[in-house]
Image (tube, rainbow, N blue to C red):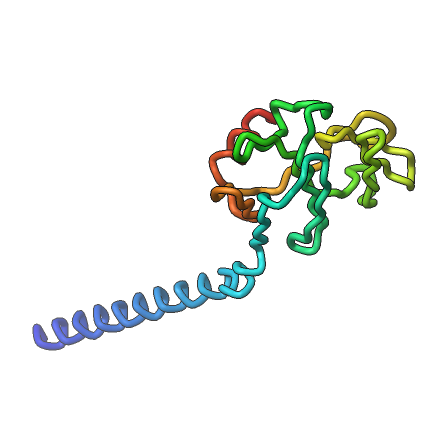
Length: 168
């Protein structure tokens, strides 16, 4: 009788161990399907060289299908301590160029140094802050990191963290 009990205990423990290993392997496989593919992660970064930009120049790049504006500020442009990015002693304004009211793309007017949304008359200053009309919030600042004179969109660097904390 003692032999049957020991054999039965061993079979129960072996079955439990196999079930535990199978459950662990299943969880690892499920987690692997939730992670984005490396090609998707690589597509999330956009690199912009800021060194050839002249003062007052507007550059629009695409990041994750959205237009992102970059303006190298002149001395006459408003400084925005909570939204400006400083690269090599130059101030830049960076933001996702989408109106926060209904998702239109506001046009930049260099003469007035404003973004104007044609749909409902919303206006944003050169820093991307809403100044007139129905837009409820400023234009979003995309996550970025600064590497020398290069702006990497899609990666959170210490400069972005500082702006994020200042705009909370």
